[in-house]
Length: 186
Image 1: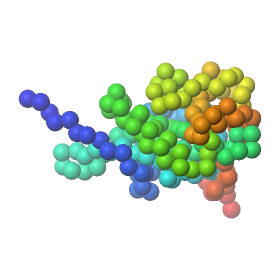
Image 2: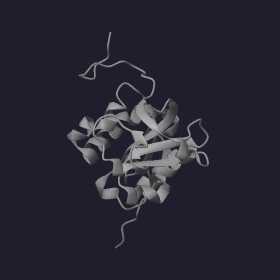
Image 3: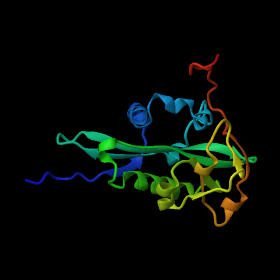
């Protein structure tokens, strides 16, 4: 007997998805994820809501189940507003179904309508080249903290603009100041 394979759908992340997205990121990346340099770029900054997507399908009772998520964050590179992709997370049992690629494609397509020239990420080149990312020349962009230069990838949102990305990578505008424990300030 063959079990029916559910087809997932991509939609914008809703405010009610936040806890499930955080649980998915914790499952996929573990507790050490918050110590990485790219997480410093996200502290106190909200992801771009119009570029935050989730993959969902439905269980046998018709209840929506979150299968994957991707967020894009505002950053500044050499004084220009750009985007940082990540985290991209897919439930371990759902990997290999194309969910991660579809999430990135949805975010990239939405980002092309915006003011950004490019998207940066730190990741595995063979996977991210499937949606057009390529390795940047070492030293072209400089992330805060220790980062493997061979894992800095970029994608141009406007023809040829990836060549113009260079400089220090900094956080976008801070939305809500936070203290070291993550609690709000003042």
